[in-house]
Length: 142
Image (tube, rainbow, N blue to C red; front, side, top):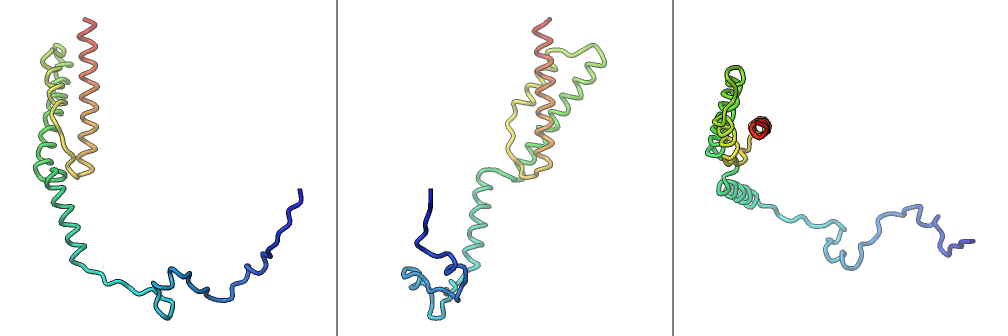
């Protein structure tokens, strides 16, 4: 199949300078072809930041209360894991240990805004969930 072209590509290869703006855009440009700059206001940027801060405060994200609750939950989970470890070294875990693990998991936790703390609590929750699942499986088998 033969393709023939009616236009030449060599004419568009070279640029002979700036091209005039299209009709619709010509109205937006000044006489020298440069778009005028809009005035910026620092007040609107500050208002946007305070609006976001207010929303985050209303949602409880990253506030001191969320951090304190997360730390309490972390301490409960670590305490339950420590007691389970001591029980494993002694007489063995009981139903009370399973209840402690489940209670520590059921407590609601919000994001604190501290990435390190949130990651650590996520890992602790996984460990507690694994140990609780092991104890449940052992209780069902017995």
